Amino acid sequence: MGEIEKELKKVKKSGFNQIRLSCNTDTRKDFLEILQLVKKYNFRIILETNGRMFSHPDFIKKVDEYVDGYEIYLSYSSPFLCRDICRATGSYGESARGIKNMLEFSGRRKLVIAKIVAVVGNLPFLNSVIDKAKHLGFFGIKFILPFKLEPDDDMPFLAEAVPNITLAIKRARKRGLKILLDDKDLEYNPYLPDDLDFFDIGKAKLEIDFKKYKEKPKFSVIIPSYNREKTLPLVINNFLKQDYPKSKYEIIVIDDGSTDNTLAALKKIKLTCNFRYFYWPRKKITPKGSLKKIAKFYNRVGPTRNIGINHAQGEIILFNDADILVTPNCLQKHEKYHNKYPNIIVRGFRMFLPEEFTPSFKRTGNFISLEKISYPERIKRWQKKICRMYYLSHSRELWGRHRVVTANLSVRKKYLEQAGGFSRDFVFWGAEDVDLGFRLGRLRMKLIWDKNIKVYHLYHPLESGDKLTTLFNLWVGKNILYRKYLDPRIYAILVQIIMFYLDESALGLSPQFKKTMNPVRDPKCENSIGNKL
Image (cartoon, rainbow, N blue to C red; front, top):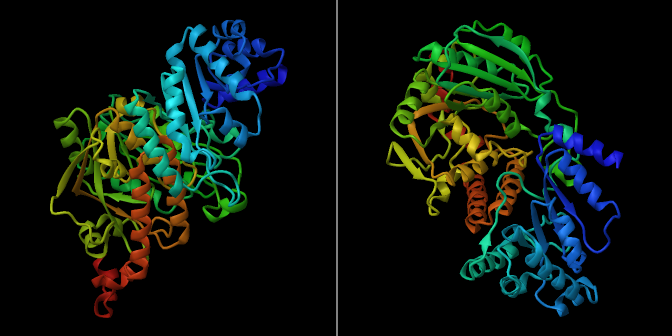
């Protein structure tokens, strides 16, 4: 029991507030004591079981006072399927009796849901499982699609699972069953590192705390950074030159365990607005096995931004990256929309700078020249409208949620807190901001995408899409997104994005080839780049 309490303390310190306990036929003798201990640390308890342990009604009455919710594994619709696939004789009948007891004797009937794990063996029979859940009297359904990690495991490929799960969800809704989705973090995520200390945001330390103004700012500019000592000062310098009152915004930099001289570089900047710099140390954990194809290290950019949100004083949060340059009227233009709409997300339009551009304080301040040598993030997707509004609460606007990208994005702090901030699920590049867009969409938010709020992205290989790792990252990110929201259009977007990357490469339109299409690359004017900047 002492080891269990030690783990509970560690998990609580890492920011978790819910514990899942899995128990089936054989239950520990001290099970009730464990429940009491978990409640001592104010965790919500979700009990996962196949129902067999509750085939005796007296036991459910003892357990029910500690449990906040039940998730009952219901992956098969008949004893024959259960016997043929699970190789467990008699278990189906005991589970059915246990489920009936739970629904009858539990004081939390609406929190007793069916958890359907989609595997190769039951994919063709999901509709009959839905009918069984309705017959037993469940309140809702929770689908779990495990990740396929090995070629010969029993988990389906995403391509074969999506059509079957989509049909099953339609049937469940038609039968009046509620589909329950993950609110913030994915329940089973094999891509996360095992060490929970990796996510302990309480270890972030305030290294620079510059206060010039006492009044509360309207904007909090949050910039996550990792080994950006060369570009981060340039980004901050542009924010210090805003055509906006210095007392009305603050800058918060959160360093995700950099190993370079970022702190020393920041101390050289002459600050003119309130500024804070947090350093969040990290253990050296490297991905293993096939994950090395995706990245050489784990990414904590989502939780890093959460640190900034937690310490922000401003009413509006503006997210920016440590390699994205903003124009002097950036905050002015963001404020215009927030003053007009109460529930708006504002995003600027991103321009990429070429690889041969050498940034400096002088050059990154000359936006006329930056405009001439940069190219848009989608070379052939310039829309006729300068500004477009997406209604994220409408189901048809999935592409709008896909455009919630933290390259110069602003939203009111209260909505970020209601949505739960960024998820810790995305430990490789990309998708953590799109995921936030899905949860903001549930709050009936609108997204403004304005091409007049231009930002300039300094070149680096991964973001520019000139490595195969970009496709791996997209694949992993959209795999996680689909499992959280079970929306088939996420899979469709993944296919479209990957095909777009392949088409660009095949036709010579990928960023490394785009440079040859830019007028600045013409030999006649290439020597004039330095003079223009």
